[in-house]
Length: 344
Image (tube, rainbow, N blue to C red; front, side):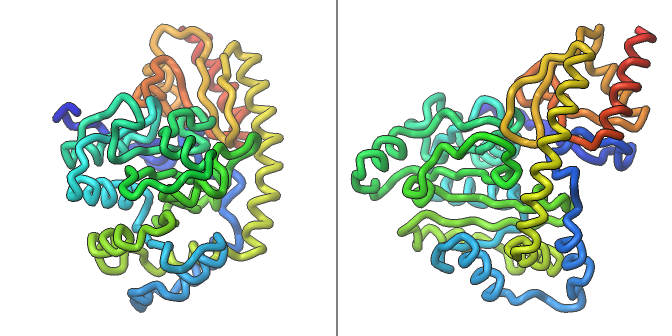
C-alpha cells in the first residue's frame, strides 16, 4: 500500500458549520430518537463509568443472544478499526482486503500499520466487509472461501482463520433486502456495531463488537490494546438505551417513514434528470444531471445551506451519496439545484 497519506473526507459539519439541509451523512433523518436522546441528556457526567462496563456488556450480550465474554466496547467504529488493524499487524499480518468502494478508515488504518492491499479476499490476513455497504447501500460480494464453503458444508472451522470484520453500522437502517450471512457464518466473524447512526445521534461516539466463537485469546489481546474507559458516560447511556424495547420500536417505525421519504426523494431526483443507483438503505448514490463542474456545483449548494457527499473519494467519480431526508429538505435541494442550473 502506498505510503502517501490518505486524505480523510467525511460527511456532516465542516468549516462552515452544520448544514441546514444535510444529505451528506447516513444518519437516521427521523432522529434523534427521543428516548435515547433523553438517556444521553440525563447521563451522569460527574463520574467515571464502571471501568469493566459489566452491566452494559451484559445488556448487549443479552440483546444479541451471545455470551458476555464475546462483547467488547470501543470508543467508536474508527477506534476499533485502528485497534484491530494494529493487533493483526502485531500478529504478523501483512495484507488487508478492502471492498472497492468503502469507508476510508479501513485503508487508512492499514496504511498506518504498513499492511499491503490484497486483491483477493483469500490472500489477506485482515478482511473488511460492510453490509449494507457504504456508499452503495448494497450487499457485500467478496466473502472469502473459508467462510462461504466451510459453513455451507458444515466443515470444521479453520484453527488460524484470517480476521474478518463485518461492519454492521447500517444493518439497523436496512430498508429492503436481506443479510448475506447465516447465523452460523456470522458467528465466525467480528461484528462491529455503531448504533449512533440508527438513533440519529452521530455526535455520541460509542461502539461495541461481538467477537467470533472461540476467540477468547484474541478478545484478551484486543482488551490489552484498549485504553481505560474507551466509552464515556454519554456513550454508555446511548448503548444502554439502544437495547431497550421502546427504542427498538421507535427505530422500526422510523424505517417505514424513511422508505416513504426515499421513494419521494428518488422520484424527485429522477425528474431532475439524475440517475439513482439501487440501494437497500436510507442512503444511495446518484449521478447528477450533466454539469460542467460537479465540485463547483456542490460548493454552490453548500453556500446555500445544502450539503451532498461527493463520492469521488469512494472511487465513484461524478457521483454523490445522499442520505434520505424529509420532504422539506428534498424541496430545498430541488429549488437550489434548479437555480444553479439556470445560472450555468
